[in-house]
Image 1 (cartoon, rainbow, N blue to C red):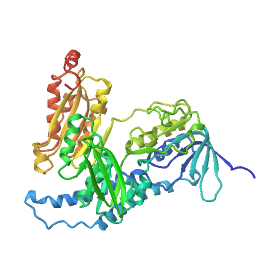
Image 2: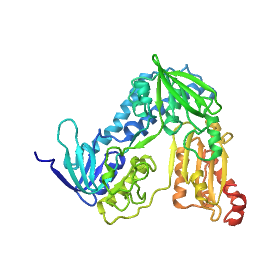
Image 3: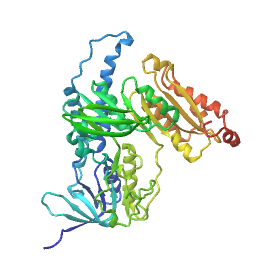
Image 4: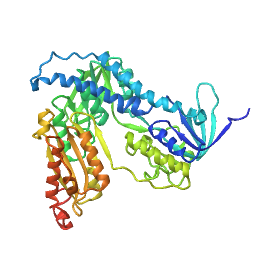
Length: 488
């Protein structure tokens, strides 16, 4: 019996998510011999189980919260009635609409550019693609390969066996047909915080569990300390859980939690959501059969400016790269990797955008440019400006006066370096600040820009003014910064 036929292409792309689709478009600029290999249904993580359905759930939660708290403005409505089935019906319907845009785009690709199956490396440019369920495997020979296989939810060892169908991950939340009565959310990162707050506002009894006192991605110690205070009034939290031992009792999940102070608590829930991070999809790829350099965790070592893995003809993009798991970063990485795979061996360094991350809780969180932790690790001499939103004019007017902003500037040059924020409209202010970082603006240039009144951005101006005073209105001798210490 003869082996599987071999398909020869210039560029093979494994994965048709955001990064893979972007890589496909970029590679096509150099060659028409491109093949995209996908093992699952089309539709990006963002559209299917990430950004868009979570924001749909948050939109419903924000509406419920606005009704419940309208009385502070002298506007009194009947108590809000939350129809969980209707909430989830809209989430699913709109989610499917967004997924449809993605699948329609892929359906327009030539059939010769698509192959369904799970790819496994037999060598650097040799792939065996198993479609499963009957048809024989297809062997693919590609001169260059882009790995864009995404990631999957990470679940602590033994939890699936212990909890069965009472354990869920965020991918499953958006398939609900109704809201649960109660939910334990384990993991106080971005997804855990967003979902926990949204469901609590929609009437679900929720407790959020985390470790080390951290809530969300903020790295500035002042904001880290403030965040639990801001959210504690509406979201029950245990952020110092040193041990979590969930078990099934009857129809309930019982979470046994040992806190940092040694106290032990138990609480029962209908379901447990494991929002404990995501892991790159590299298992089963057969990377050990390639020349790709791997780290101790088995992940490829690559240049984020080119997407190239070592000095090979292999490239990587998107969540599988475990760099910045955000849609716009995945799209950029796919474009860079696809372009360089298409033009290989003429690999070119491409500039990356200024970092920008947003958490859509309320108040929102934002990191733009260099974070506090990154500046500390790099040994940069910087100063800090700050503003609270407690008494900020427009924030008080609209009843969203919680949180604070921290901005960072370089001592030697007066250049704006970055910011972290917990507060209203952080998604919009974050864009302004990321643009300033990317342009290389000085703090003075930012202050010379117009600020309208009354707007939330006036809080940004307050922080920048304080930062400029700390920088002494321009370049400051390095000796002073060294005396006071970074951020002193």
